[in-house]
Image (tube, rainbow, N blue to C red; front, top):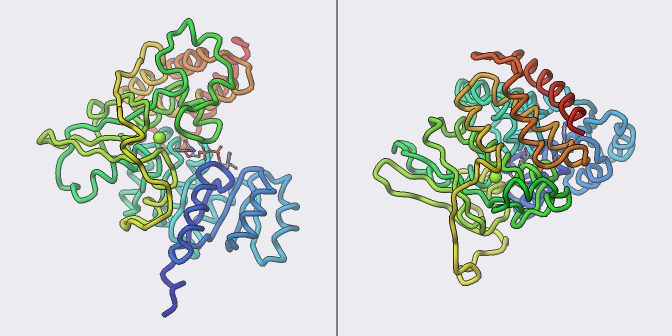
Amino acid sequence: MNNSVKKKKIAILGSTGSIGCQALEVVHEHPEKFEVAVLTAHSNADLLIKQAIDFKPNTVVIVDETQYEKVNDALWKHDIKTYAGDESLCQVVEMDEVDLVLTALVGYAGLKPTLAAIKAKKPIALANKETLVVAGELVSKLANENNVPLLPVDSEHSALFQCMVGEFHNPIEKIYLTASGGPFRGMKKSELEKVTVQQALKHPNWEMGAKITIDSASLMNKGLEVIEAKWLFDLKNEQIDVIVHPQSIIHSVVQFEDGSMKAQMGLPDMKLPIQYAMAYPNRLANSFPRFNFLDYPQLSFEKADEDTFLNLALSYRALELGGTAACALNAANEITNLAFRKSKIGFLKIGEINQEVMEHCTFVKEPKLNDYIACDSEARAMAEELVLKNA
Ligand code: NAD
Ligand code: MG
């Protein structure tokens, strides 16, 4: 029997990042189930080349055109097609060779390739939450119309999805997204004024890319996840709750209409949700580390502090406003997050500038794709200006 016929061929957008590298570990763990069709990166040519030689994709894309020659010189002799530029991301996801697109790239850059993949009717394993924050209504509607599943990779959303499997006919009363609280849990505004980038980059439970690690420290990540959950699971705003759970063992909870609650738990290891999205509806045996109850005798829960961590409150406000509000918030946050990482602004300015941009950016109640694109540029420009003013 020819086993290769059954292999799922995966396009990994953002293969050189934290999620991308772990997705390749999952492929390595299950060579009989998966093969890599496409790898893409923004500018890390050396790692992209190494991954391509190891995993032999049909095609790679390097977004940064100045790195193209290096990538092409290294890979043409391996019979791997190479492209450059962000337009190429939209083209490669449409290829016949692709069965599943893993969106592991960071930020607004995920929107257009995700839309292209949905139009090409490719199932999506969605790590790039920003796409659903920017244009969740448009993306989820397009996915529905094209019958394309959006399989969550984010650990909380994977947990919710795993709790819902087999229950899709049973109405949900509410969901609880768990939050670790990040490195600054329990701190007040006066203490947050002086925190450094190094402190913010030290997440207690997860090792992730720089942007999401800062988002976790500012609770923006949980805010983005509230919005992501709304569009993934078609929930009303008041059905989405956040509970701080510092150990990150319970990854999220679904409460059904009879009051019964289902939670999904395990060690904080992104390989599991990545594998679940890649293999859905199957579970695959693996060698990843197992949870031991006796290592965690106490699991604890607390209320999230929305007064100190403004970004979480802003996300609920964005959901209330609807339209382009969340798009503006996301764009502002991409600018302020980077500005903080470059030590241009203090930690508390992230939320303050995000709020100002969301309040003052042009608002469109029923946006089309062009309105989201325009809102993203306007909000970025506004946030850049405020960063300069607050530097
Ligand atoms: P990362 O910064 O480690 O990696 C990002 C990847 O995207 C890299 O391969 C990079 O080359 C590529 N990239 C960056 N900018 C790009 C652009 N403008 N165009 C095209 N490609 C670009 O990020 P990450 O931590 O792996 O996160 C990726 C996504 O997954 C984010 O949306 C994040 O919120 C989400 N996510 C990550 C984790 C985690 O544990 N890291 C957990 C849940 C969700
Ligand atoms: Mg998460």
